[in-house]
Image (cartoon, rainbow, N blue to C red; front, side, top):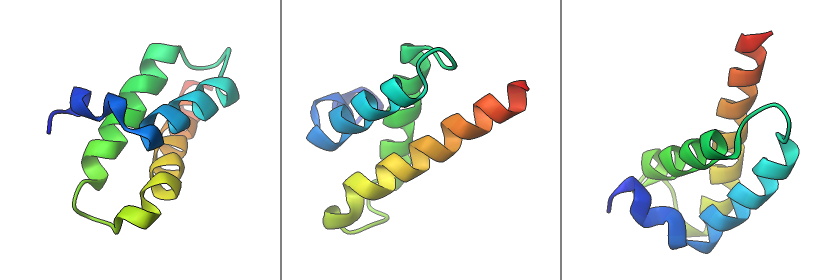
Length: 72
């Protein structure tokens, strides 16, 4: 599946909603979306499906936080 193919997954939509709100004013929504989708792609086949939502949020959050920290 391509990175864009993950957009329809509920875990991706939920992570995008939560992280967009959390990083509002610090990271553009498009960057948040790309980060979530890339994290989802990186997790493909690496974890059990039941853990996907939590680990996706954690990985994307970590990457976004690192971006913000690198700018300051």
